[in-house]
Length: 190
Image (cartoon, rainbow, N blue to C red):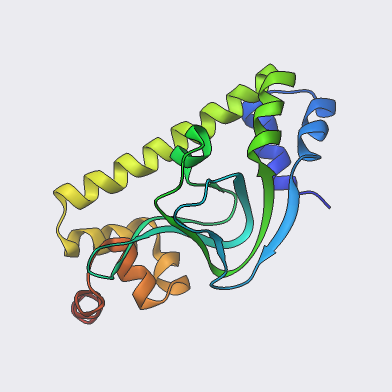
């Protein structure tokens, strides 16, 4: 059965009638991504928008030092794609990977934008996705620029303690933009 959470989210953000919401939901296809499965690789154009029913996806880069920089970790009831690639139809500079086995609902670029033409109120959902993404990216960038590693870890413990339980130390360190050794030190000192 289609996600009640996605249905509720669409209804809250768009105020569409039930009939239109059901029409929209027909475009979302279920997908189970296995742990560590790549859903997007650099150089590919992001042609899918993922809604996470259960699980976790990460958006990350490989940097010049062969390290990983995680830009975003997406959990239940959120959307994820490489948004610049999705909108501009240009190759993505990043990866999307399932951090754990994840149950997803997927809509293609073509179907997403077809809905914008056929159901104009769907734009409210598009704006919600863009605003959410902008808020998250800006908040993370602000933290990286203004907070020490200790402050970022403390904020994570305060605001998202489930991440510490769900993510491996390597993924958690990449998310905080610190080395695994620094994360170990922080964990033992706090």
